Image 1 (cartoon, rainbow, N blue to C red):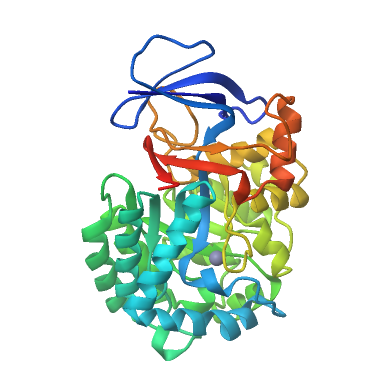
Image 2: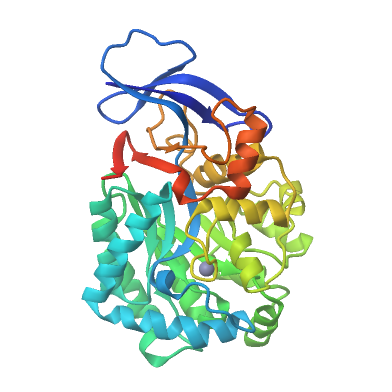
Length: 406
Ligand SMILES: [Zn+2]
């Protein structure tokens, strides 16, 4: 048993954070109790007085092979992919490069307070396997999948529906459910890169093996025009995914910017989840997602960095951009980052907030020099939301184990 002391915050309620002074965590990494006064539960005392303790950050959309291709400006999403991203992802056919970058990537996530991430790997089976190996070693919680594409890309990155299914089976059988911490996501890149046969094969195998699905939806107007040209006879981009069988409660679509209400209804009706990626949306000038309209339809929303179209691996930067995109209280922003992330991944009964019975994924933050620990909560959270960065992260814990600093 360990008892952590600090200014402990949890964001179950988007309008008012809960605050405690003490959190007891058992040897299995499960939260036993939260309290204002120190209780006599025994165990080791870990003193973080002067620091904030928050639920671990969830990044619901990030690309591992694009980690070193951040901040490459371009005129459009499709041009950016061709010029900067496909060449970067091709290099992941080299296992030693794939391993080095994966190691660096997971360590950077933990250093920035991200305890759970939904990760797009490269279009290679082996690099995806390596990503799982490095995630397993790092201790992070993650959902990972090999990017699938069978058209409109360089030959070396293309697969076939049959090969895609074989790759997914091979990697998912080893890693899906590993340590109850790593999971497989079937990851068709987006409709521009995938034939209907590939989208259907992807959704079938995901359903059969009960895997996650992650993909991009409705990011840029030029992309949408291209999708509608490639898939004539469909009413909308969302309808293509619906008819392929890809939408559902284990599906996370990234961006979802230029949607009409019919599409919102399709997403809500299938309980499909949304990864909101405001930093990426600003960087590529994709547009601004209408958070309020999505919420009116009851859609479940998390935040994603979308590195490398998003230039920042720190979720503080994503919080700031989420605020610029849609005005919201700091408590709401931290709610989306933590509880929203957990809900989008269907993990709300084990992570996303600090509550008894949940697993102890948390970050320890030094508010200085942005604010004083004694400041009013609104001030503290507002300063962190807009100005926070990795220098504020003192320690990162997953399941009660300190993973950073290691
Ligand atoms: Zn993306």
